Length: 180
Image (spheres, rainbow, N blue to C red):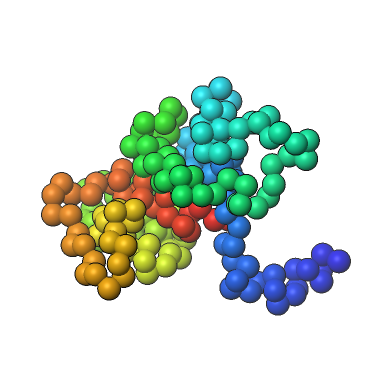
């Protein structure tokens, strides 16, 4: 049965690639791994997972949390996930900071295009959409973009410069990082 599943065309189809949204628990763990944070089994991590929408032991039914994103994904959850990524990269989440992130020393003084390339290589193995790359390069907050798609796109921020923590935070909030 496994051979049939793994060798099926659907298994490797583009529509199946990164099609599932990470659970809040998976998001916290993958962010910790990405930033080289030490495992934290304190109640603050449990609270963080709960704030992201999956309280530990908080499921009312005995079947456990579903494996589909509809159980915790909504507009507020997306905003919370982006804020979590920004806070983690800025060192505002206990145990998480760019100090332990291996690419940080070489990227800190690099120009913005090199920083974007380094972040994309480190967090996404070089595979991001053109929209994500444009947001990372411009520093434009995707939540403050004009709702009208015919309106001109906002110009990249002139000051202050984006900075590596904000760049990594935006990357952690990107759709590619939110999916598994």
